Length: 292
Image (cartoon, rainbow, N blue to C red):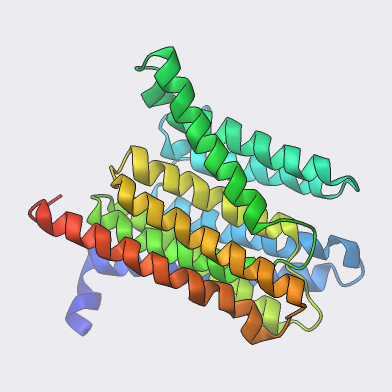
């Protein structure tokens, strides 16, 4: 075990993709909680800011590119998360639900076009439009299913966590260690935020927080499919996993189940198709000869 830790590469993976993002998230949660004690209405941004800050810390340590305008597809990631998070957070404060749905759909559509641009610009107009429409449509529908209203979104956290863990496992089998690091950082950040949301009595994990998680995870899944080359079968199972978690959360919400175990149930159910996605990715990896 000590020999593994002495490896600079392994040590960098653990520090940059797990420990340091976790520390940043914890510090932001604790600081924001005490700073907003006099302003309870601002507490709905605690978890969103902590998730964004923790993942941003992991991104900075791993990729170190905050150029503007972004030079690569991955360079867009922090800017999409920041700007998209602000847009949906502003829309979430509106009373009419149409603002929330419109903001999510617009953010998913614009993000999909930006991420796909290096590919679609080489295709015909029809092929480019169909690719964008498919990604934007799936992203928007999943977003709506995972966050259907303004209720406490703690039940969404475990599903997003499972999605991030699955991406971190599938990505290296598809040939991308970098996306695996991003997935690990997101999983750790979501886990820390979720644990603290349980520990702080009476806290809510409101929509803007879950929105940031969906936005980052969606961007990573687009990169996994179109740039890391993950198979369509694997991606289908990843999507099924998120949809299963959203479906279970909806059922529990209608039944009025709000215990801690009930909140964790969507994540447990979504882990089953996520395990299938990992198995399919492993089989594809072995068939290809196990090389990158």
